[in-house]
Structures are given as C-alpha cells and as structure tokens.
Image (cartoon, rainbow, N blue to C red; front, side, top):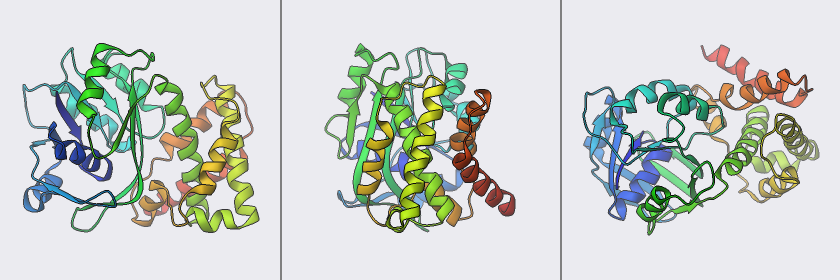
Length: 306
C-alpha cells in the first residue's frame, strides 16, 4: 500500500517514520524548508521507544504530479488545512483513503466537501512530540497511539487492508469500529486540556495540585460535555468522570500542544477547538463561562502576537 504523509513534523514525522522503519511504502509531502532540513539531516526520531533515522522519499508541496496514493494521512495544524487540501488534491484518486489526524471535528466537513464522503475515514492520535531546533522529532512519553476506522463503523475491505499495512509498526495503530465517537471524545479531552494549560500557563501537574485548579479541570470537562450532549454529539454517559481520571494520571509535566505553541509564539488552534464548540453553544443559547474565558485568553495572546 502506497501511503502519503502530509507533513513531517512531530506527528507526521513520528508515525510516518515508524511506518518507514517497518518497511512500509511511505512518502512525505513537505514544504521547501522542511524538505531541505530532511535532505541535510534525515528524518530523525528520538524516543523512549527507540531512536530511528531515515532518508525518506519526499514530495514538495505545490509541485505538479500525476502520482496517486492508496492512503493520505493528514497531520497538519487546522489553520493549514485549506492549503493542505489544495496540496494533496493531485494525489487523490477514486480509491484513495483520506485519514486526518487533526484535533477537533470541524475539519471533517471540509474534507468531505473537498473529496467526498466515501474518501474520508476517521482518525485521531495521542502522542506528545515536539521538534527541536535541528528538526529532530523528540518523543518522551510512552503514549504513541493512532486510531482509525470507517466513519460508519464497518470493517470494509479497504480498512482491513489499511490495518494490515499498519500492523507490526513500532507504534500503537488501532482499528476502531466506533471512530466518530472516539473523535468526539478526543475533541472533549484536548479542548479541556488545552484550555486549562493555556489559561494557567502551566503543565497539568501543578494545576491539579491546587484545589481551584482541580475544580477548573472538572468544571470545564462538565461544561464541554453539556455542550456536546445538547448539539447531539455521540458522547457516552459519564465521559467527564472518565476523562478527569485520565487527566489526574497524566505525567506531572504534561503540556498541551496549544500551550507549547504559545510558548513558541506560534499560531494556535483555538478557533478550531474552543471556537467551534462556542459557536455551536451559541446556536443553542447555552451558557459557557469557562469556555469563553479560555477562548478569550488565547485570542488575546493571538492579538498580541500579531
């Protein structure tokens, strides 16, 4: 199976690199600066699961091509999605599976509009990675999960073929028959985690040690769940309690990717995460004081950054 990974940053570089490591046919679609970096230094992974270096096949974004792929894995930030859709269009055939690993849920409608409902499958990942100043992918926590599946929950011939292509990889690739619910659950988790860590400018450990910090995490999870239930999202009963337990078990120094982006003075995905949920809450006239506080905090940062 021919696989195109869009982006070779912390997520795309890690999972694509692990697929390369086990011998999969993987190509990376990258921009000029990253292409030069990879050509000079190779794709380098430093991880608790073992280091790996490779010189992968590369395609340059915007370059004309008649080549198509069996699966395209999108690992860009949400604010780069529109550009990514244009970049991957030449590589999509009627048989291509489009697997997005973006946070949130709003991107699904954009992808379906661009490529059709049949092409787009569901996906998400759990991993903490970053790029150092040399472009090396640094992964320090034990979690490296990628979950995928047909949006209707079926075990189709093509999804089983993708599962086979992913098998034996030095990362946890899981086929799900309930991927849409999985994506909403991840959306809830990352919206809350990014919310509290950006608002407090701290990792999870110091926040939950404070009684008021613990209450903030719990109440934000409850508020997010209330919105999702009211807009008909397929979230399970008791989700806030389940996710609170997970947050209490996270490493003391665990940060959200949005917090790390703010520390690097980079753009954020708050419009895609908190912003999208707030727009849905407004349609239902729901009261969301914590989400509003989180969103305002990040938007003020973005205005100052601009």
